[in-house]
Image (cartoon, rainbow, N blue to C red; front, side, top):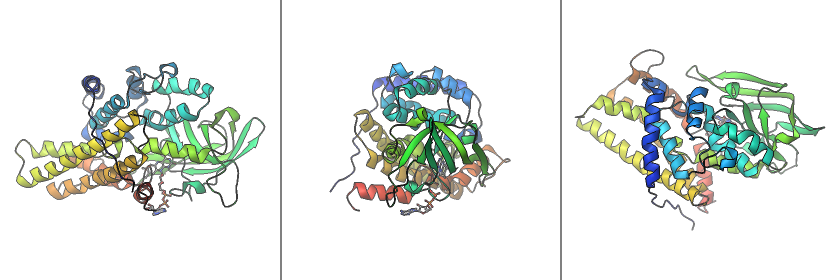
Length: 382
Ligand SMILES: Cc1cc2nc3c(=O)[nH]c(=O)nc-3n(C[C@H](O)[C@H](O)[C@H](O)COP(=O)(O)OP(=O)(O)OC[C@H]3O[C@@H](n4cnc5c(N)ncnc54)[C@H](O)[C@@H]3O)c2cc1C
């Protein structure tokens, strides 16, 4: 029977010196940013910060130099991600492009697309959104209905995408459309496109979340035109390609570090001589954190070795999101701190933000149930 494989992976010495460099940069770049601001984690959007990170060579780190990349290792990239998340840096303006849109173009894009987009992504100049989910298609992504019909010189698109994070402040969205209806074969006839979000025929409507924030959108396509040269990969190969993209989306340390700010606040609040209960809770959280980090690092090591750790990445996301989801409740139960939004101490506001957002951690990037289905299939159980 197939099983998990989490080999121990040590960071090489060049990764350790890089860590010191990144920490120093973040200390200066983030200055006195408040805890509640840092709690936004990879949700914070700041184009200027992304440009500065790009100028240091820390976006597109593994990509070939001829496309503006830096030919560094997966483990070095891991260090940069980890430090940014631990510091609560506002990485969202380049996160999706660095993590999945860029690697997707590198694998399936045309030479022209790579030359046009990758160097600008690596400089931190282009923000990408993800145009997958639709009002009736989330977990069952293959059931999407937004149609792209071939017309002279390109495609005419009609339909609606939903939950499109940051579409209103991004430049492009890699989007999945149906280019052909194949009866009883929903995985066929799908294609991916680079969509310029400023194109005529695209209307972006905000969806305000429970915490009053605007990062979700509904994106309506009404006879929007997407030129032929914006097709990514082959027409009809969208399902295979999007599965690769989802594996990029699921494998990083952001899948267990979203509540890290709260652990730091807890340690600060407990002080140098925590009471017994606090010491037990901090010890337990730290032990879980270190174990998850080792598992996640092991996935990065497998990627570096050219392996395909889809199964292990799904395990890290499932266990990791469970961990980051529990932290707000654990801290609340231990200290009795009240979650607050907009007013109150930094601790209360950090807790307030994370209490509101934690339920979404196991939804974004594929729900817990869907991941467990993938894990069961990987283990040969279904
Ligand atoms: C914070 C956040 C950001 C997001 N950003 C984006 C984005 O930028 N772009 C984008 O395209 N989408 C985005 N999404 C959408 C996300 O991908 C979907 O919410 C997710 O795939 C689930 O789809 P759904 O909401 O339609 O729920 P459904 O698929 O309807 O699922 C409802 C419930 O049923 C369960 N379920 C469904 N199918 C099965 C099954 N076969 N077996 C067992 N249980 C099942 C699910 O696990 C879930 O609990 C985002 C979501 C969140 C929360």
